[in-house]
Length: 103
Image (tube, rainbow, N blue to C red):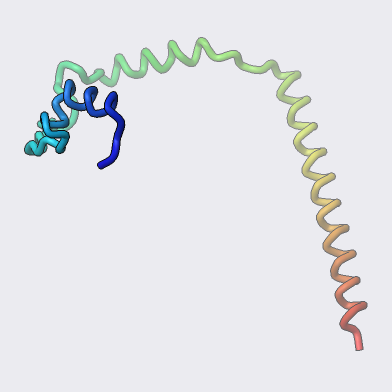
């Protein structure tokens, strides 16, 4: 393992290298994994959950009816325009391919 002196000194201070510069071999520590999800005291009751959800939904900046209508019209126009463009390109390419391969 090639490394400079500063890196070796830092690793020795951290206990990852021995005095001879070789890596220290230690057993991997097993981490205790909790079983069964969160403890009972950390869970939220369904009633509290619904109350918090309603509180968060009150903070949402809902669009006005006029904005919804305007955005819906924009989306529908965009769909019509893009569908027309794709249809036109498909028609043109189909005619071009039939023209090239027509016998």
